[in-house]
Image (cartoon, rainbow, N blue to C red):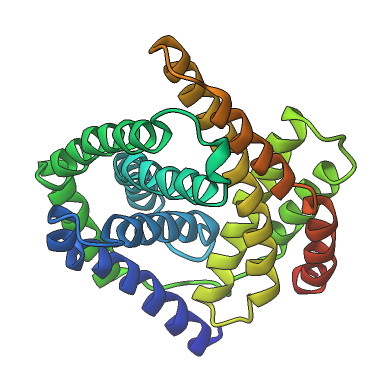
Length: 273
């Protein structure tokens, strides 16, 4: 057994578990980036508990932790997504010539996402104050106080999944099906990155691939949000022209995606065996 590898893995897992507790006051106060940090900690810990299922004993206990970390991530997700979408749409608006901004576009964008975030933060507060959250922290502490890896980690199966997903997505024509396939590839690449980081491995090429895929996914989600904003503006009797301009900017930003993702994939492939 590789003692240093096991130590690196346990240190990483415990650090993410500790973050879920340490970040609670900041999340409750809606401090900048706090929700995002806790969501990443929950997502990373959940992914690595799944990835290293053959290394970490306690199958039923681990499975229960994975389920509860999924619940916490779902509770944190909408607040983070509203924050990100607002920033992305306002950035598009800042890039738009003023003569193309017709009607109260900024006011509508800020009001819609403020309402969505307020509602989402209610879910966050409810989760933070719940017995379920406290039980999760308690069970994580108990699990990591007792767990000892009993095998050497092997990422080959996960790396094969990244290769399979990318090889499936790359030849597909542009469209909704390819967007979904790229998003699925991104999720597996993210798991591979989290796992590599937990073991102290170099993950820069995989992270670069994940970033390219993530940027495109953000554009897909932003385009959908702009469609909804345009519909709301039209129903309110406002001019919806500007939302079409913003959507055009999103499409322009996607022009280089195919070239960038192929370049990132070529660089990441050697890291994946």
